[in-house]
Length: 161
Image 1 (cartoon, rainbow, N blue to C red):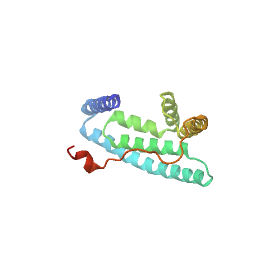
Image 2: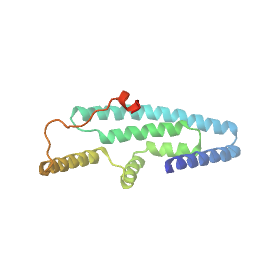
Image 3: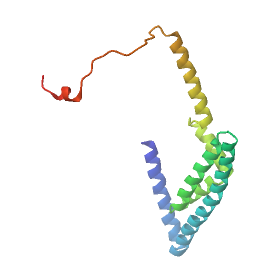
Image 4: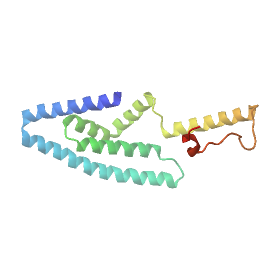
């Protein structure tokens, strides 16, 4: 629910800025800026996306996980969506997502907020698997064979008894 509220407020503020700045600079100039940032964003996304894809493919061929390339690709897609949206605030945030230093700050902010990266998640999954296997070794309720129980078909449950 808080994310929906944030998106709604961001969109509202973006349109308020668009209309207030648009009334000052004129309709034609506003349309040119909005369309220009949209086309520039598409061009930059295509150019950066291809180089990121090539870098990720190279890391996969070396047997490594391309987690930084995946984050970069997600940030570029997010930047492209923001640049395509009409508004000056969304354009400014989209341009910031295109800058490598802003992407690094975004990754640090996501880590600070508690969002896990792929390498951290894999470590936690391996650790929990190790703990579960230790618990199973020390368990006194070790059961082998089938589990016994009653079976009730769907037809039986709807019948009157």
